[in-house]
Length: 181
Image (cartoon, rainbow, N blue to C red; front, side, top):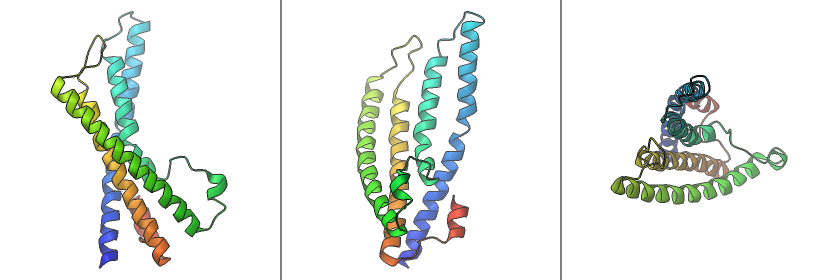
Protein backbone atom coordinates (compact mmCIF):
# COMPACT_ATOMS: atom_id res chain seq x y z
CA UNK A 1 0.00 0.00 0.00
CA UNK A 2 2.80 2.43 0.94
CA UNK A 3 4.63 1.62 -2.30
CA UNK A 4 1.47 2.38 -4.31
CA UNK A 5 1.13 5.77 -2.59
CA UNK A 6 4.78 6.61 -3.35
CA UNK A 7 4.33 5.49 -6.96
CA UNK A 8 1.19 7.60 -7.35
CA UNK A 9 3.02 10.62 -5.92
CA UNK A 10 5.99 10.10 -8.26
CA UNK A 11 3.87 9.59 -11.37
CA UNK A 12 1.73 12.64 -10.48
CA UNK A 13 4.78 14.85 -10.02
CA UNK A 14 6.28 13.51 -13.25
CA UNK A 15 3.09 14.33 -15.15
CA UNK A 16 2.74 17.87 -13.78
CA UNK A 17 6.42 18.72 -14.30
CA UNK A 18 6.47 17.24 -17.81
CA UNK A 19 3.38 19.20 -18.88
CA UNK A 20 4.72 22.39 -17.30
CA UNK A 21 8.11 21.94 -18.95
CA UNK A 22 6.60 21.35 -22.36
CA UNK A 23 4.18 24.24 -21.86
CA UNK A 24 6.97 26.61 -20.92
CA UNK A 25 8.89 25.62 -24.04
CA UNK A 26 6.27 27.56 -26.01
CA UNK A 27 7.79 30.73 -24.56
CA UNK A 28 11.14 30.14 -26.30
CA UNK A 29 9.97 31.10 -29.82
CA UNK A 30 8.09 34.05 -28.33
CA UNK A 31 11.31 35.13 -26.61
CA UNK A 32 13.20 34.79 -29.90
CA UNK A 33 10.57 36.87 -31.71
CA UNK A 34 10.73 39.64 -29.09
CA UNK A 35 14.55 39.79 -29.28
CA UNK A 36 14.53 39.80 -33.10
CA UNK A 37 11.78 42.41 -33.22
CA UNK A 38 13.63 44.67 -30.78
CA UNK A 39 16.91 44.29 -32.66
CA UNK A 40 15.37 44.96 -36.07
CA UNK A 41 13.44 47.96 -34.76
CA UNK A 42 16.58 49.37 -33.14
CA UNK A 43 19.10 48.89 -35.93
CA UNK A 44 17.02 49.06 -39.11
CA UNK A 45 14.39 51.61 -38.14
CA UNK A 46 16.22 53.47 -35.35
CA UNK A 47 13.06 53.14 -33.24
CA UNK A 48 13.61 50.65 -30.41
CA UNK A 49 10.39 49.74 -28.59
CA UNK A 50 10.57 50.46 -24.85
CA UNK A 51 9.01 47.12 -23.94
CA UNK A 52 11.24 44.58 -25.73
CA UNK A 53 14.15 44.48 -23.27
CA UNK A 54 11.95 43.99 -20.20
CA UNK A 55 9.71 41.49 -21.99
CA UNK A 56 12.73 39.45 -23.13
CA UNK A 57 14.16 39.56 -19.61
CA UNK A 58 10.89 38.33 -18.10
CA UNK A 59 10.41 35.59 -20.71
CA UNK A 60 13.98 34.35 -20.24
CA UNK A 61 13.47 34.28 -16.46
CA UNK A 62 10.22 32.37 -16.84
CA UNK A 63 11.76 29.81 -19.21
CA UNK A 64 14.87 29.28 -17.07
CA UNK A 65 13.08 29.11 -13.71
CA UNK A 66 10.02 27.12 -14.73
CA UNK A 67 12.17 24.78 -16.82
CA UNK A 68 14.40 23.87 -13.86
CA UNK A 69 12.17 21.09 -12.54
CA UNK A 70 11.76 19.68 -16.07
CA UNK A 71 15.54 19.70 -16.55
CA UNK A 72 15.87 17.85 -13.23
CA UNK A 73 13.31 15.30 -14.35
CA UNK A 74 15.29 14.73 -17.56
CA UNK A 75 18.56 14.58 -15.58
CA UNK A 76 19.87 17.49 -17.67
CA UNK A 77 21.56 19.33 -14.81
CA UNK A 78 25.32 19.22 -14.45
CA UNK A 79 26.78 16.17 -12.76
CA UNK A 80 30.37 15.31 -11.86
CA UNK A 81 30.51 12.34 -14.21
CA UNK A 82 34.15 11.56 -13.52
CA UNK A 83 33.05 10.16 -10.14
CA UNK A 84 29.42 9.37 -10.81
CA UNK A 85 29.83 6.94 -13.72
CA UNK A 86 32.47 4.87 -11.90
CA UNK A 87 30.40 3.90 -8.86
CA UNK A 88 27.65 1.34 -8.22
CA UNK A 89 23.96 2.23 -8.48
CA UNK A 90 23.65 2.26 -4.66
CA UNK A 91 26.53 4.73 -4.31
CA UNK A 92 24.95 6.85 -7.07
CA UNK A 93 21.69 6.83 -5.13
CA UNK A 94 23.59 7.90 -2.00
CA UNK A 95 25.25 10.77 -3.92
CA UNK A 96 21.81 11.73 -5.22
CA UNK A 97 20.28 11.76 -1.73
CA UNK A 98 22.96 14.15 -0.51
CA UNK A 99 22.60 16.51 -3.47
CA UNK A 100 18.80 16.33 -3.38
CA UNK A 101 18.76 17.17 0.33
CA UNK A 102 21.01 20.18 -0.27
CA UNK A 103 18.89 21.23 -3.25
CA UNK A 104 15.66 20.91 -1.28
CA UNK A 105 17.07 23.02 1.56
CA UNK A 106 18.34 25.68 -0.87
CA UNK A 107 15.06 25.80 -2.81
CA UNK A 108 12.97 26.10 0.36
CA UNK A 109 15.08 29.14 1.30
CA UNK A 110 14.70 30.53 -2.23
CA UNK A 111 10.92 29.96 -2.15
CA UNK A 112 10.63 31.80 1.16
CA UNK A 113 12.79 34.73 0.05
CA UNK A 114 11.00 35.03 -3.28
CA UNK A 115 7.63 34.96 -1.55
CA UNK A 116 8.68 37.79 0.78
CA UNK A 117 9.93 39.76 -2.25
CA UNK A 118 6.61 39.05 -4.01
CA UNK A 119 4.51 40.33 -1.13
CA UNK A 120 6.71 43.41 -0.79
CA UNK A 121 6.62 44.11 -4.54
CA UNK A 122 2.85 43.56 -4.66
CA UNK A 123 2.05 45.74 -1.65
CA UNK A 124 4.38 48.56 -2.67
CA UNK A 125 3.86 48.30 -6.42
CA UNK A 126 7.54 47.84 -7.28
CA UNK A 127 8.39 48.42 -10.91
CA UNK A 128 11.50 47.87 -13.01
CA UNK A 129 13.54 51.01 -13.23
CA UNK A 130 13.31 51.31 -17.00
CA UNK A 131 11.40 53.60 -19.33
CA UNK A 132 8.56 51.10 -19.65
CA UNK A 133 8.58 50.37 -15.87
CA UNK A 134 6.55 47.12 -15.71
CA UNK A 135 5.40 45.75 -12.37
CA UNK A 136 7.74 43.23 -10.72
CA UNK A 137 5.36 41.28 -8.49
CA UNK A 138 4.51 38.69 -11.17
CA UNK A 139 8.20 37.90 -11.58
CA UNK A 140 8.69 37.18 -7.86
CA UNK A 141 5.49 35.13 -7.78
CA UNK A 142 6.76 33.06 -10.72
CA UNK A 143 10.08 32.43 -8.94
CA UNK A 144 8.21 31.40 -5.79
CA UNK A 145 6.08 28.92 -7.74
CA UNK A 146 8.95 27.59 -9.85
CA UNK A 147 11.20 26.97 -6.84
CA UNK A 148 8.31 25.20 -5.08
CA UNK A 149 7.74 22.97 -8.12
CA UNK A 150 11.46 22.25 -8.36
CA UNK A 151 11.44 21.35 -4.64
CA UNK A 152 8.60 18.87 -5.18
CA UNK A 153 10.52 17.31 -8.11
CA UNK A 154 13.59 16.91 -5.89
CA UNK A 155 11.45 15.39 -3.12
CA UNK A 156 10.06 12.92 -5.68
CA UNK A 157 13.59 11.99 -6.79
CA UNK A 158 14.76 11.78 -3.16
CA UNK A 159 11.95 9.36 -2.28
CA UNK A 160 12.61 7.19 -5.36
CA UNK A 161 16.33 6.90 -4.57
CA UNK A 162 15.69 6.34 -0.86
CA UNK A 163 13.24 3.56 -1.73
CA UNK A 164 15.89 2.00 -3.98
CA UNK A 165 18.52 2.18 -1.24
CA UNK A 166 16.21 0.58 1.32
CA UNK A 167 14.67 -2.14 -0.84
CA UNK A 168 17.24 -2.66 -3.58
CA UNK A 169 14.50 -2.38 -6.22
CA UNK A 170 13.37 0.66 -8.22
CA UNK A 171 10.20 2.38 -7.07
CA UNK A 172 8.91 2.65 -10.63
CA UNK A 173 9.27 0.16 -13.43
CA UNK A 174 11.25 1.23 -16.50
CA UNK A 175 8.03 1.48 -18.52
CA UNK A 176 6.46 3.84 -15.95
CA UNK A 177 9.58 5.99 -15.93
CA UNK A 178 9.70 6.15 -19.74
CA UNK A 179 5.99 6.99 -19.97
CA UNK A 180 6.29 9.41 -17.06
CA UNK A 181 9.25 11.20 -18.62
